[in-house]
Amino acid sequence: MSAIARLRHFIYSCIRLAKLKPSIPLKPIPRVLEETLRKRLSGFPVVAITGPRQSGKTTLARLASPEASYFSLEDPDTRAFALEDARGFLRQTAGTTIIDEVQRGPALLSYLQGLVDADPRPGRFILTGSSQIEVIESLTQSLAGRVGMLTLLPFSLAELQDAGRAPADLDQLLQGGLFPPIHDRLVPPEDWLRSYFATYLERDVRQILRVKDLSTFQRFVQLCAGRSGQLLNVTSLAADAGITRITAEAWISVLEASHVVFLVQPWFTNLSKRLIKAPKLHFCDVGLAAWLLGIRRPEHVMSHPLRGALFESWVLTEILKARTHRGLRPALFHLRDRDGHEIDACVETAPGRLEAIEIKSGGTVASDFFDGLDFWRRHLPGVGVTPWLVYGGDSVQSREKATVLPWNGLQPLVERLGQA
Image: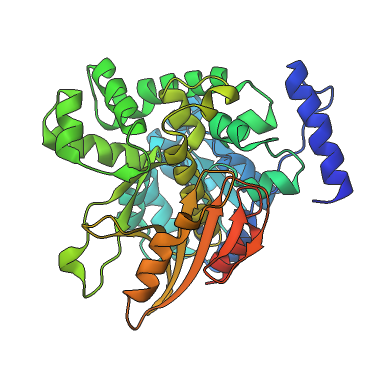
């Protein structure tokens, strides 16, 4: 981190402690996905950015194309115009045009198809949407072959470090999470996350699932938070929530579609009879998971029984961002057999090549941290395994058994996975 970045970090830390807003607006934090977006705009007439609400999609689109015209379908008048007179609405678009929250007007995409077929110049439209199911279904039906798809998740730690706004310690990171408003506007995480989740329930859930009993769904999401970083047992989850397995599966799909959770599938080999085939459940933002668990202060994280699971989920999101924000397939898996030999995260960078990442929240490296990595290096014949250990301490260690990285020094791993 540069001297200027360290100074900025100190200033913003003081502001947070004083719970004051800065006297000058904070500059937008550069996003890794911006370079990927520019490349897509040079090759596709339409580029769509999906991601959770408040992940920074609109800010990113406007930074990448500052001269573009901007329309938001969240605005009732704009939405009415677009839906009632789509041709007239699209006639006012010239140059690059940003259409925000496009899931609010999926019928518009059929008219957009004719427009780009008549004039397929690259970079004509940037579309953003918060509901992955609705956006992707509409785009694949109407704009197949004409649209480049991207996903924007909340900040990565590296993005905050480069801007000098990274959390001061690991427990602050795990409690607050990485949603942009918490770091752009310096809103107390517990206040912002409470409002965010309430808005999510009232808007996305009602719109996608038309759930009438929101309290049951809220309990379901809280139960999911308690299972973050664990193997997903849908039957057990449904029983604890008091719903059917079919309903639980549908609700998990909604949580995935709205980027609240993601599932890490198991990696299979010719030893598949002995491998656990259940996916692992993780939250896309660790701060939201912590809030759902009742964690309201950083000091509450240290003694929480799920601190290790929260840490694992956060590291998995950093890996996911390292791949997704560079336009790469996640290719993210976990590996575990019936005897409990496990690797928390595997990224398949090429056929027969695995980056194997073990994740431990402890601040001191213990010898048994390497047990899973050692076992699978011996029992994956024909597979090249590159071992990594990410832990809750502060020092980089180049050990024979693995490259050891601290929580705040993931750059070597991120850069390697971002180039695969």
